[in-house]
Length: 353
Image 1: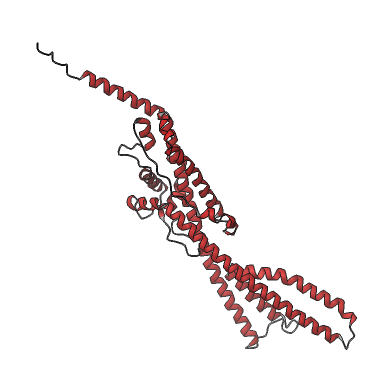
Image 2 (image 1 turned 45 degrees about the horizontal axis):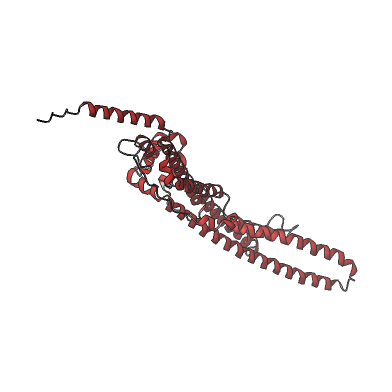
């Protein structure tokens, strides 16, 4: 329903639970180290307390932030081979040293361990910076895409504010009526209830100029980096911008001068297809806007009209008229009107001599 953002709520819950886990881990460390709390395994495995504390704190950070989980995961992938390599070297070299010289081996292993830990820490810090920069770039890109789509859908919001009740209706039948009311206003249905294609079919002299839609360039500009966007929004974005290309192509066909040289019924059918492509672009735009808004860290105020079109617009709301029948009926009425005018015309008076 309008106003709900599941992914944003999930992210908030994760941060709350991450803070709770971090607080519990810190309490455990303080209890063991500062207050000397005794654990059941302290006599047999004294190092286990510190291991549990470190693991708990690490997992708390991973729960708190996806970035921390990514960095820690990569650090583990790097640290495990280094640890096994160091341990293997120690096992292989230990027999070669005398008892008096074994301390040099320990010193070397400690030095190597410190260097390895420093290298792993540097790797983690650089990974954190890279992930932070990537997150900022993704956030800014999603915000820009959302605003560009919002600009494309601006007429929908304006029409909904003027003609729709602002309080969302929960019944499906009421929502369908609201969508139909939006379509009537959007597609310029005239006072008689006829759409533009029906008017074209009924009146051969009717002329309708179609303006070109504003070109949206942002997605094409980031096409080389599109893999950085969340998988949840990619299908909706690709579908929307691909539909815009179809809309641009059919708009050019309707704007062409040759369009008005087509047969009357063919003109009506082509204009009907243009409206269908336009509605599909609007529908996919609403879907893309909604998906981006769900994954955004700072969701915009949800627009009821966008959600309504996203959920309720379907092909059954627009039935294809029989344009040939409309044209034939209009021609029949035109001939009937001409006959009546001829029948009711007053006879001319004979001219005087």
